[in-house]
Length: 386
Ligand SMILES: NC(=O)C1=CN([C@@H]2O[C@H](COP(=O)(O)OP(=O)(O)OC[C@H]3O[C@@H](n4cnc5c(N)ncnc54)[C@H](O)[C@@H]3O)[C@@H](O)[C@H]2O)C=CC1
Ligand SMILES: O=C(O)[C@H]1O[C@H](OP(=O)(O)OP(=O)(O)OC[C@H]2O[C@@H](n3ccc(=O)[nH]c3=O)[C@H](O)[C@@H]2O)[C@H](O)[C@@H](O)[C@@H]1O
Image 1 (cartoon, protein in one colour):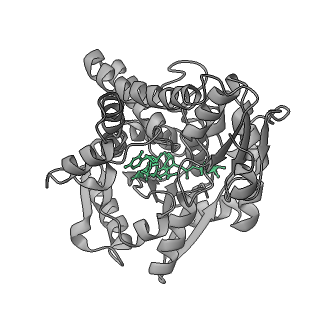
Image 2 (cartoon, rainbow, N blue to C red):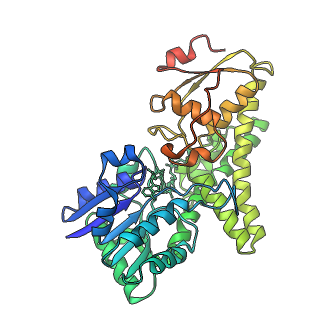
Image 3 (spheres, rainbow, N blue to C red):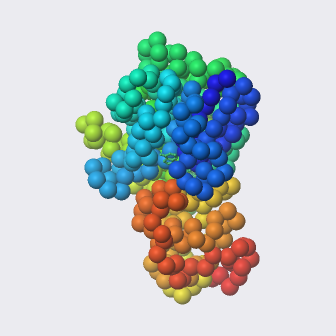
C-alpha cells in the first residue's frame, strides 16, 4: 500500500490530496499542517510524514518582506522547516514532491538539507507543480490540462518519476502526464503563471481603447479568434489578483537579475508595472466620474476576493482599489458572500505582502478602518450609494 503524506493543507494541499484519496483507493493519504485550526480537521504531523513513501510539500511560498531579495525573492522559510522536519522524522527511503511553486534550483538546496540532516535515508526529489485555479480546483484536478513531473536524470530519479506517475495515471490519461528534468519542471510553473499574467497586455490595450472610443471587449474578441491565441484569458479587468501571479513574476524578475539577465528581468517587471497602473487607473476613473472627489460619498464594492467562487483575498485588486478610494475619503460599503469583515479589515490595514502569509501567522490587524462597513447583502451595500 503506497502511503502519501502532504505537508500544507491549504488551497492546493487540501483539494489535491482529497482527489488523490478519492481516485486511488489503494493509496493511503494523510495531510498535515502547522496551523492548529487546519490540523484539527486533518491528521497529526510527524507520524504520517515518517510512515509515508511519498511526501508532497504544498506549503506557501510568499514574497520575502525582509532581507536579501525582499520584495521580489520567494520566502522559503516554510519550505525549509518542512524539509528539516522530513529529514528529522524519516526512517525509510522517501520521495519528496515539490507541489509548491518554488524558484528554479530549489531542489538542490532541499537535497542538501535532507542529506545533511539524515544521510542514512535515500531521498528523491521531484517537482510536480500545481496548475489548479481557485474556484475550479476540483474540476482542474479531475481533468488537468497537464500533470507535470520533473526529476533527476538518474536511475533513482526516473524510478521516482514512475512511482508518482503511477499515482496520477489512475485517473489522468497518460498523454496528459508530462515528464521533464527537475529544472524544466520548476521553471515551467513560473513560466506558466508569467504567461498568464500577461493579461496585462489586454489591460494595457484597454487604456488605449478608452482613449480612442474603441471597445476592448470587441478588440480582445477579434484577437481571440486567432486559432493560435486561446480566448479564455483575454478579459480586461481592473488588474489581476491571486496570491501567485505577482509573487511568481517578482520571483522570476529576481531569478533573472541573479542570473545576470537585466533585460529579461526588465521585460517581466513591466507585467507588474501595467497591473499596478491598471488598478490606479481604475480608481482615478471612478473619482473623475464623480466630479473629481468621492469625499464623504458612499461607494459600494460588490466582491472583495480576487475572483468569484473563492474567499482568497491575497493580492486582490480590491485592496489597492479600496485604499485609493479611502485616500480620497470615500465611505465604502463592501459585500462579498465568501469574505468576512475581519479578513477585509485585516487586508485593508496590513502592509503589502504580509497578507500572503498563512492567516494564523499574520500579525493581528490593528483597529478596523473607520470609513469601511462590511455588509451581508448587495442591497444594503448599494443602498444610498452615490
Ligand atoms: N492557491 C492557488 O491557487 C495555487 C497555489 N500554488 C502554490 O502552492 C503553494 C501553496 O499555496 P496555497 O495552498 O495557496 O497556500 P496556503 O497558504 O493556502 O496553504 C499553505 C499551508 O501550508 C501550511 N504550512 C506552512 N508551513 C508549514 C510547515 N512547515 N508544515 C506544515 N504546514 C505548513 C500553512 O499553515 C498553510 O495552511 C504556493 O507555493 C503557491 O504558489 C500553485 C497553484 C495554485
Ligand atoms: O499558481 C496559481 O496560483 C494559479 O494561478 C491561476 O489561477 P487563479 O489565480 O486561481 O485564477 P485565474 O482564473 O487564473 O485568475 C487569476 C487572476 O487573473 C484575472 N483574470 C483572469 C482571466 C482573464 O481573462 N482576465 C483576468 O483579469 C482574474 O480576475 C484573477 O485576478 C492560474 O490560472 C493557475 O493555473 C495557477 O495554478
